[in-house]
Image 1 (cartoon, rainbow, N blue to C red):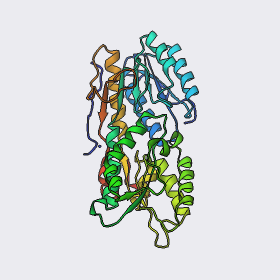
Image 2: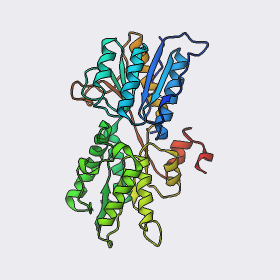
Image 3: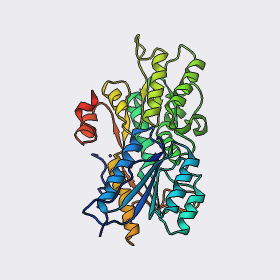
Image 4: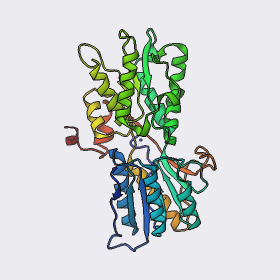
Length: 359
């Protein structure tokens, strides 16, 4: 059996276009054909790591890889997928730009008996998605909000905490899971008045961030601060992703937070990007969610290899991820909340970063 063993860990508790990482099988392994790997962007370091990890693991099993990054351009990704299908790639692993826009190439893949693995982002509105490899996305939001509750002292009561809320890109199915998970924790505090959102923007549609762009988030934060009562200071900001978090923090600093006795709010994040990990180590960003892309790559490679070998891929969720046409069988890994107190134990001791990376 060629499949990789899944390391279903709780992880210590938890893009310019063109061809990148195209490679042949290793010399000691048979050539089992080519796997198409379609990633959304190189703008985030985590997507580069995801792609590189899958290339290494597929090649170790004897597969060739055709990896493409789509520059967050859905039409470019559609073109890339069509090329992979035309070239005869045996399977497709897709981190989608827009999870609702891939019906055409997915149908073409189905017609040629090419299995499709949705990677991290659920592909919607198509029956032609075989499996989904991701993390427990609802729990990501729960962990972010739990950090806010703890670090802003919401359980203590006695004062009103002020927060602004940010969500990810509306075309990414994960963004709603993250937001809904966070709101499941924060809603009682909002209802009880312990937590107040000065802008009044608490609905998902009001707080999304196009393409997860930190500049878009920074501009929105600037608008929120400009429209707020200058005597009101923010205590916390729900941010779903580190790139957004850094944009928010930059704007907050431009408005005097972090100096002159005006403390920076508690700002959450996700993906444990090195620039944000450095900020956490300095006490600037409060928290991030660590999702070990090495383990996620193992899951996606295992699913693909077993499917191509005529075996049944291992899953641990057959109910949660309804894509509008079918419930996609999934394997979910567990995320971990990282702050200054456990940063070294989780990220350094776990081998994700080196101590020297922190500067």
